[in-house]
Image 1 (cartoon, one colour):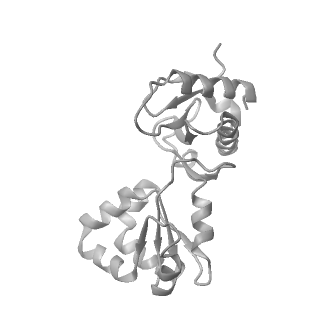
Image 2: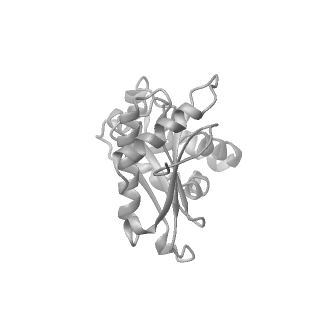
Length: 216
């Protein structure tokens, strides 16, 4: 893994070189890979990483549950609450199902509802890597909301590059460094040859230029 100073310099440079915008820009990693045959499905992955620091920009988490669980979560901060009746409606209205799948970052679902989730939302969530995390009936949904607020999704598919959001431009650089290290550690753990499968790493803001990590 790259040393902290290389990450720190690249992140700082990416933030400083980005033109000022009227919205809060994210800070993102692009990890380019090498010597991986992605024609082999076993070499691909879809995984989540829990960051040490919560990104300032909130993620959108939808909760699928029964009436009791939805009532418990009503004021917790979920972006969307989805009932059993909503799932049944999605079967009849694929357009609405597609919209829900697209606008939310993560989904958690009461475990007994997962078969219905599969029938109503599965074809829209599956390709996006957003199938819900099942939770038991006695779980506190707020605990899962807090966890997913610090979670990023890493996907390696047909192209040998992984993109990951590590925070926003208003966060301390040290927090962004630690988040980047968590992402890189998980990527290396997933790769067959670890760090040797990483060709290059870039940092950029939403609209800013890419800065290569380790380049002087």
